[in-house]
Amino acid sequence: MSDVVDLRSDTLTRPTAAMRAAMADAEVGDDVYGEDPTVRELEERVADLFGHEAALFTPTGSMANVLAVRTVAGVGEEVLCDARAHIARAELGAHAAYTGITMRTWSHPLGGVDLPAIKELFAPDMGPFFVPTAAIAVENTHNFAGGTVVPIEDLQALRAYADSVDVRIHLDGARIWNAHVATGVPLRDYGQVADVLAVCLSKGLGAPVGSLVVGNAAAIEESRVWRKRMGGGMRQVGILAAAGIHALDHHVERLAEDHDNARLLAEALGVDPATVHTNIVVVDREDAAAFVAAAGESGVRISAVGPTAVRLVTHLDVSRQDAERAALVLTRL
Ligand SMILES: *Cc1c(COP(=O)(O)O)cnc(C)c1O
Image (cartoon, rainbow, N blue to C red):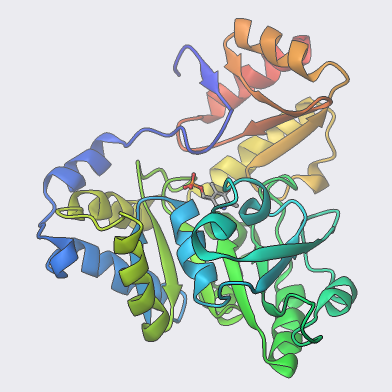
């Protein structure tokens, strides 16, 4: 048990001793030359997990999303997504700034698929005044909706629709591992509903750095060129890929503990546990900023995600005892 319980984000995890040992022992080479065996192993393994041909290691999830989305939509084309999607809200306009893509949005209360709204937005060819729709993007689990799982049936229905109108699907799977563990749906099934995915190793899986783009061989070859163009070509980066491989071996199934801890916190704070699908708890508080400050003074770090909303995220560095202590401190407040 550490002094401070930090529930601000699952990006805060520090590499474990075993992960650091794996990093220290990693075989490396120059990955821009395609000669880092550990990066290749990670890329092949993740591609296979999702049933796709290839994958590409990137420094961040945001870069993975930019690279992935540009394989399904070009300059002057649009992507449809939920209004609270990470790609629309939290990537500083990267998709517009680097690859010339605009977005139009639907609003789903849980960040999921609203097929009737998507059908209404969809406009691939409305003549010379209108932005052509090139792709649809979904996020699973959905970060700003509170770690919600998008049901596989909804994703499969979207896939069927997308195929019927010949449009591509991008899946922002920064926390796809949490969705997989919470539902038991195989990663391959999530892979099948998307033409291209972005997945993160640096969230709940506990790696210090790293994400991947996953897709067909041509998409990944293009993404390799664009990654370099954006300044993301990395050299002896097997040292980081080794952390990712270690995370895949040891930190996927344990996400269930984070989900249990999130439910514990929800129950203690009077949040309906049914709304807590994975490792994120959102609490309504009139005095969000003051509550966050008071919690911090009592050794529990949490964040305000709106004037009346507070967010708690469980992760690898929050033990059961930490969660119990945080629940005690927060209920007292
Ligand atoms: C964290 C996150 C990303 C990528 O974030 P980086 O900080 O750039 O690694 C992308 N999508 C979602 C949904 C996320 O939560």
